[in-house]
Amino acid sequence: MTTANTNTNTETATIAVGGKSLQYPIITGSENEKGIDISKLRADTGCVTLDPGYVNTGACTSAVTFIDGDLGILRYRGIPIDQLAEHSTFTEVSYLLIYGKLPTRAQLDDFNYQLCHHSMIHEDMKRFYDGYPSTAHPMGILSAMVCSMSSYYPEALDPSNRTHLNDTIVRLLAKLPTIAALSHKKSRGQPFVYPDNSLSYSANLLQMFFAVPADKYKLDEDVARVLDLLLILHADHEQNCSTSTVRLVGSSQANLFACIAAGICALWGPLHGGANQEVMTMLELINQDGGNVDKYVAMAKDKKSSFRLMGFGHRVYKNFDPRAKIIKKACDTVLNKLGIRDPLLDIAKKLEERALSDSYFVDHKLYPNVDFYSGIIYKAIGIPNNMFTVMFALGRLPGWIAHWKEMTESGAPKIGRPRQIYTGATLQDYVPIANRT
Ligand code: ACO
Image (cartoon, rainbow, N blue to C red; front, side, top):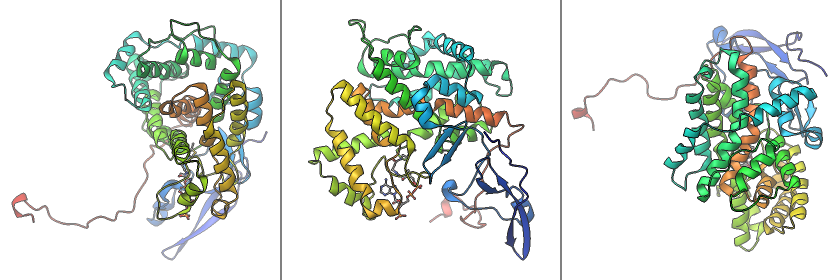
């Protein structure tokens, strides 16, 4: 294990602006990633950098997760994702991400105990669900409920007070599955099912989603394990859109509940976590259209069409998404185990095969991402389409917390406040309404 050598590099970059030549330090990470530190650029030159979509911008240094998009590498705290997928559990991975190292047996037992014993939500919060129409999207409910949690724990409102931080972390991890399950039950018109402390994190989630008082719920350990696997694979992905949102909101010293609520909203979008729901909608559309995969591959390549292959492409991965490989295998395993023959899986595989042998996708380096096969597993388990992104949020939660914690513990973080290049009207006078044309 190597640690960051960010301050030992003597290399510099030269930037010439307005006849001045300036030297800026090059920061090197522990995996030899390099970034030019331009934090003094505006003071030195009056110029800012312009980088829409932050394609070239590193907003922070971070020790949580490493990705090499060209080699298809993903590691949490240095540990390869495939090793965690094979050997770990979601709660252990959460501990690893948040506290920086794998827990000892005693630490993990204690963490799991705390997660069990904080899983109920305040009874009053149950009434919030009555205010939503049955058609409400569960991501909107999830974000609102998480933000509402701040009203029940006023001691967590000041992020600089670390006395209660571990309680807040545990409450978030413990209660999010309950909140998600209650919203599912509400949409089905079924009675709420309380958490059961005797079950593992993922088994409890399944029970809260699918148990009904009239029937004894038969827990399938293989299904619980695959759900746990999906949560592990989604647990962190460095400075993605929702994590950057959590950091940005947190940089104003907003409380952790508010930051996570904002992250949930960012995740909702179809270009981010919302893609898993969009993938299923797309696969269903192709299925209803007779399974004509070529037609949709052609549409995705057509620049006059706004259609994209959902679940394909990634800002960082330009080779393959290591999570997608693991999920594809798990998808086959779980469907076989449950004896489900889903035509959407056949279409997904055909789509992948066609796209990967098409020069457009090869040249654009577009590969299936984490969302491409996950929806098929969720569907097989019985989770409805509009809950897919909620499942993603449950998985991403420890990553959001880890980044917020890292940022708030790194001295006095600066408020995130990008600049702009103004392109609007130059100075003009106010015109009274009677004189306007
Ligand atoms: N289908 C067809 N063409 C695509 C796709 C796609 N899924 N994704 C990218 N392209 C093309 C673009 O049209 C563009 O082509 P051009 O250079 O010829 O104009 C080129 O590939 C680059 O695409 P950008 O959108 O500029 O790439 P960016 O890095 O900004 O976007 C993103 C990445 C948003 C993931 C994009 O690939 C996409 O929209 N994919 C579908 C949605 C999706 O699956 N999102 C989930 C991502 S994973 C996650 O957030 C959990």
